[in-house]
Image 1 (tube, helix red, strand yellow):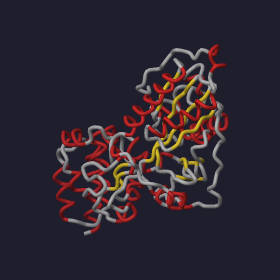
Image 2: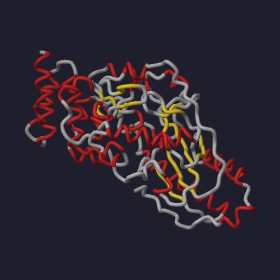
Image 3: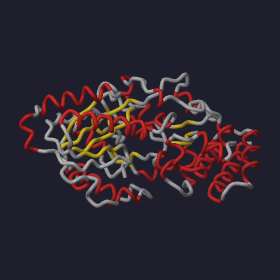
Image 4: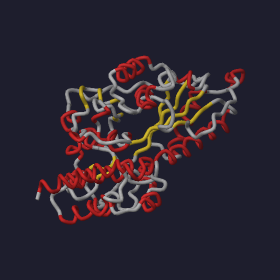
Length: 368
């Protein structure tokens, strides 16, 4: 569910002769910019190539335990089935890379510090984009009258990257993220499905060329081929989507990454053009851009729930939070303080994180 009301009133085509849709499309892009979106593109609903790629990915089992990716039949790749009557889709991007005194590359090398994916340092992006998209839809309605629409922000069976590529927002890179030629890949996507006959934009061209930096840098070799990611090996999947035990053979490769992974984006040459976000909501909270692993590991469940309120991190739950940090502590250099923190948490932890804590203790002992 998108969390946004599905506006069921259909656009009255009888009135369309009085509307300059080319002008409306330009107005929409201006309104979106005023609302804080850095780019808006418009496309149709045909996603045949993306559908084929999705089906092959699912057939190979590369989605792991993300069962929701195989649900909803063809609604994910056929927008007019998800929202009947959909003709065009608005795709928007909002930059999120935070301005910080902490260098991301250096942080990954500081093994006693926690690395959290840059998108998750501030407020939950779902809430930020969702509210802005609703304002945009309302603005359109005020201008042309009632129309059918539905707002999405990574919240329903929507192929937002494929849509963004067709709408000219960027191209899907070899790491499967969307890349903008002048702004890199540090941005969120959102969509509005509409029944408006808007003119569509030119799809983005691929500019990855021979570059394989993202493939080469991936800590767990999750990018098994250009444009093919096996989620079961991806650190973002392992630390966010996976609810059970992290495969022991992959744990050493997580390093100090406790929520998500940015390596493929940090290495991407196109991100040298990226701008830092202007959104205060995306700035780091609770010093999460430079926190010590031990300090985060000491949080009680109530502290975790309180401090992560309004954060995308909260959805993984306290047990996975402890699990992820335990692995990072096991990967850190030998330390009496780390061993003390692990042993103090061991007896009171639930079964799933406890197994990871014990693993971390064993790893620490091996380094002494």
